[in-house]
Amino acid sequence: MMKDHERRLRLARVAAIIGRAFRLALILAAFLSPDVYAQQAAQTPKTPKRTQAAKKQAPVTPPVQMIIEPKAIEILKASCDRLAAARSMRFTAVVTYESPSRLGPPLAYTSKSEVTLQRPDKLRVITPADGPATAFYYDGKTMTAFAPAENLIAVSEAPPTIEGALKAAFEAADIYNPFTDLIVADPYKAVSEGLILAFYIGQSTVVGGTTTDMVAYADSDVFIQTWIGVEDKLPRMVRAVYRSDRARLRHQLELSSWQLDVSLPEGFFAPTNASGAMPIEFARPVTDPPPAAAPPAKAKPAKAK
Image 1 (tube, one colour):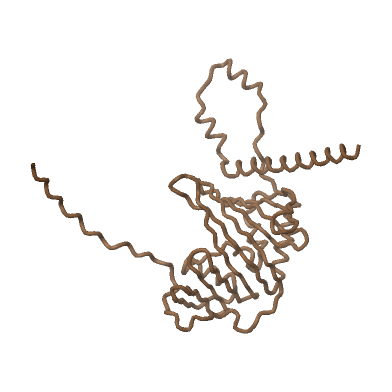
Image 2 (spheres, one colour):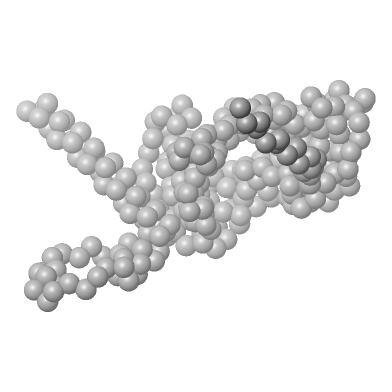
């Protein structure tokens, strides 16, 4: 009797998980294609009256409503408050992003960054792989971009806050970090501005090696799903799809090795092993066009045999 009861409970849990996943798919589809019903109506040819009458009797699926659930907001705010309260933090960020391929299916690329910050005016981001190794330093007065393999360094004056320096680095040199919203002074403001959707999905015991709450939320530009630790309120993974991206490429951010309110040594936010680096302008990278190729020599007509 007990085994039968346990089996029914398992089936009920599985059904609940499947139901939530189906709900997420419906809302994501509605968010990414808000005019899908209008497009279908415009493209559908007129049908005979008898067929139209039969269609009237068929059940119609109601449109998915954009909702903001209090539980989802509560989880997001608790995580943002935990991050905002930390005077210093360290974590590892692994970014996976998709890029179109000539074959059709997208290719996935990854990068790994070791991030350290001390509020309000110090940041260090070391990115050893994949791709060219880079390092970014900000000490409250200057920001420095260093490419160790090429032995190039760029230094510029910077605003007096971390978010000011991040904005200046992006505007001057296209330097962007996908975890920016997590390290600004007010993460909840960055998350909640323009919010049009937020709902609770359920829990996971797989992501991040701990139990996490799964929340989905969106503004008019991007749909995000995030996994947040139930106990420590720290984000473990974030997945995003941008509404303007017709290819629906996915961007994923994995966060691990969290350390909050750690002591950092003097000089930690200054470049190391860069004393002999060649200085360059702190500016957007410019790829020079290839030199114009010489026109091919005119082929001589073949001799008649």
